[in-house]
Image (cartoon, each protein chain N blue to C red):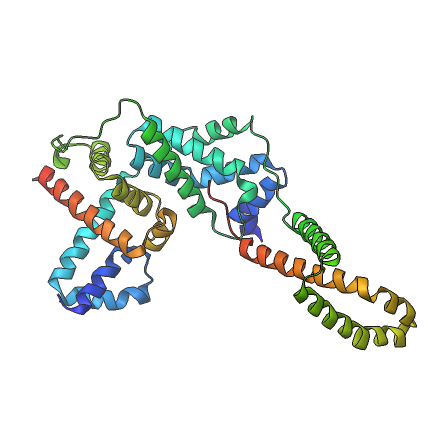
Length: 179
Length: 171
């Protein structure tokens, strides 16, 4: 009982919010903000858009909370909203241009850790959108292949193939930059 | 590549989600297959790179979300039962009225059967227990339509409710 009081389940929080306890929604935001932001960042490719997409995702979830079945896991639903928001913002971005294939990745051996992380995120941005979304959900939002397939409404095998392709491509580029 | 390699490589993407028990056969295969081990090492290398490259939410993000929520009206729990019952009642009334005014052949047959059931089984039972035989005989024809209209509405309502139960609208 004590454990439940300190870490309420998503279902309990959703019910509290629906009963009028709006501040309880902060618990949902704090629980998922890093996953949602990381996913949005992987898809949009920059901090400003990622922040807008992540914020919009939480606001949409709040507004549609009454339509959520509290017995079902909340995270996949939230991540689907995040992907949709990120897609919308990416599509509406003015002056956006994909990174050129020839742009240089900073060699990881010569750089600090934050720069190496930025280089990995930059590699993700080079992927086609579908592969990027699969990677965002699998790596950054910590979903299994089956969950990724459900969120993106894809076949599970297609998700595994996409992951395999993304890994090969990223690893090759990473090694090219490294060597 | 033999079939075992294909099976193993199909499972490699989800390696980190597998339980120790599920991993055991994979680990045995990886120990003996250089090709799959190479795939697995690549996958692990990418996993590690990605995991540490995850971008955390900026400081104050939760505050910003909660502030942005303030103008929004609080969500209200939707009770699906009352609209369902109201809809079922409306359907029942419409069906009963339409079929009573202009009964179709199948409807006549159905109500005749329903009426017979009522008179033969329900009414005698009611009269035995409560002495209401006259009343039930008087009401029987009207009750036929109401009964079958209601049954149809309830079946339709239950089917709708079952189909929609647990379905979450995507936004």
